[in-house]
Length: 319
Image (cartoon, rainbow, N blue to C red; front, side, top):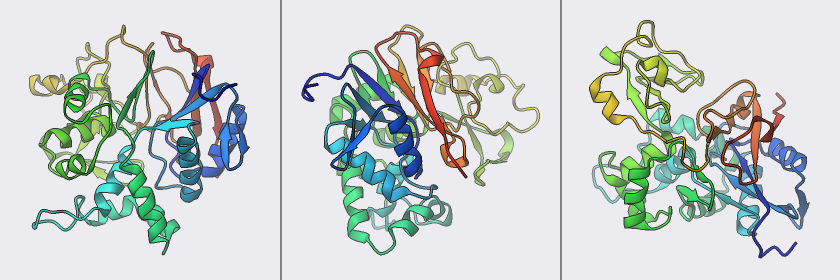
């Protein structure tokens, strides 16, 4: 195959989170072979959904593999919230009231703990990856499918295109995103973390990864949802009584929808469990909790308008 020609299909891969050796096994299962340090397929390309870093045991190996494929033209990647948060955490702020764009509080430091430990004193190597993150897009739109880490918000994406172009960010965007009320802050939050709604009356939950949260992740393809339980899209349950409560008018205004006639969309981010399958006829989430000894999942996309369960491919991540 002439590598300058269009691929015959794409393999979209969900959140790796440092499961570098599992990623090698998945690529080999998909028919990719390593040639001169780059995994290649004679007819297909890969799209990574972000969140390559943090949590897992082989973060450097995963980054090295993914970046090599991207720079060789064998893959593309969108930023996940973990890459974006790392960028902000390590970028000094021009605002005299803050040292860095992302505060160095214990919660934020904990998220990056494994990444920092595995890079150790190799600060130049880590900074080189941070610079590379800044070159990656927040979303990708192909001829017949779309990719974003958490949520496709058409209105915010159009505003991003008008100001910054096709998906990409720069230092101006990064600095502006530190203000959560700015356009950049809203784009970053929505596209990399989805739609979160607050829990009522100061309630909180402790998530499966040990964080206390006062909000919950919601579906963005459920326009007919009536209760908060209908909207819930995370492994952690809502507090008793909340799931049965009707969605308030204020929260209904914050809902995002993705219509059934829109192109197939692939996301990660949401820590699913069980047997991989579409979450809507034209939407697939490919995050199946790999780093929690779940599945590292890919979808073999060949242009179909309706996604099919048999097109999911995965490997189990060994403890």
